[in-house]
Image 1: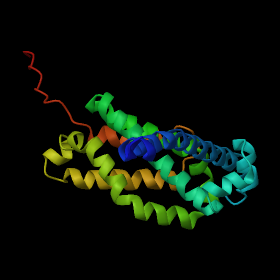
Image 2: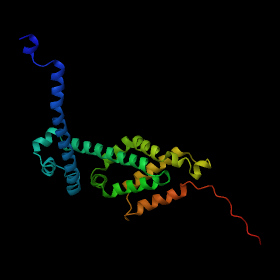
Image 3: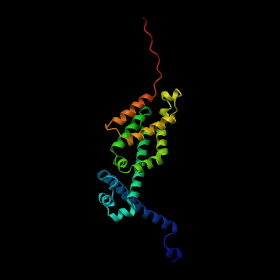
Image 4: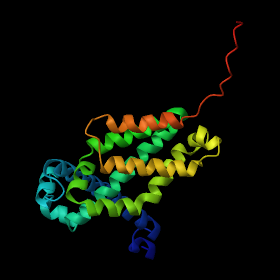
Length: 221
């Protein structure tokens, strides 16, 4: 028997084998992490952010508390990761609008999405009341990113609005105002369910591109 037989499979084969064995573990890790984040979101909806505890999260996720702490060392770390995941989901939804919504309908669709999330999302409902400092810090940190998303979504539409074509304002300024207005709507929601969307929609009607109108023919006297 030669040396190769005694030394086992080649190094490249052993490396591929280790990589393959890690894949199921990685998938399990991702599934468990998602279960914990989903459970945290449910716990926040039930008890609020201030009362978020690993015991409730682990029970709702169907895992032991020790397992929960292996993934997240504290509730603060869990909450931070939950915020990042929900932000990614929101961005994915915005880009879906960008891809599948006709340009002239994008603003209204974006306003409806933002208003619906502010009304229905457990984390967004609870945070302004229980931890306003965290909300303001995150909004300030993520503002350039939020603005970038809406720039891609609405920039071409705003470039054709009447105020921009008249030289009264530029598209970047309109994007900035829209994002700030959306943030203020989130921080100070309207008591009526559709109030925020209606108010923002009315502003859109003022800005919406107008078709080139030709004056009607004058009828003879």
